[in-house]
Image 1 (cartoon, rainbow over the protein chains, first blue to last red):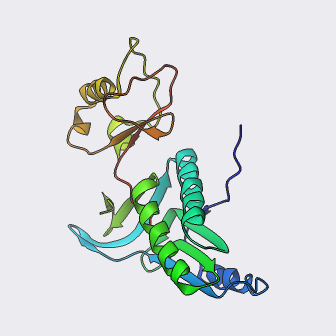
Image 2 (cartoon, rainbow over the protein chains, first blue to last red; image 1 turned 60 degrees about the vertical axis):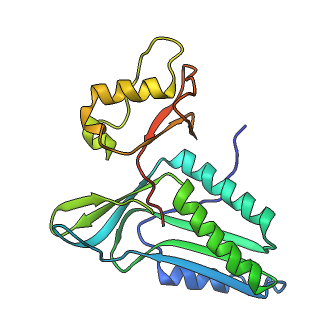
Length: 146
Length: 70
């Protein structure tokens, strides 16, 4: 059986404009009282060979999409949520730009706060996404979540 | 990371029946010794599997380096 998954992966950085439009598209959902938004931004960490200039993301896509689906289901079961959107970049995201956008909405703030943290932690530990940190002129280091 | 070591991203692995994940890991690191000092998990048919798990052929096996999403 083929499962339908909401599209999570986007090519390249997630633009602030996209985030703004996502917020705007919820104005008609008047049962919502609280949005929580988490944005992951590429940091210019110092490595041997220079500063990180960006991360090139790849994923084991089919398994990753299933993992995102499972995280969504678990979050809806656990928290009182009206809606949830997760977007993650693939390909190159330069330093200072956004690679992860988690957007949860709830009637009340507590569920929104808690769900956003839960979802981000689950993504970091359970979704097979790999990041090659580009360093200086030509080098790279593979990133590892802690 | 591991594909860079192997020089390829996909490979057909032929093995005797009853191979476990742990035995598969040993075979892979024998073929690609540079993987010995790399950390990776093994997914069988997109499910992360412990060393004792037997692999039923045909299976899609993936070597998964540390995750870095976010």
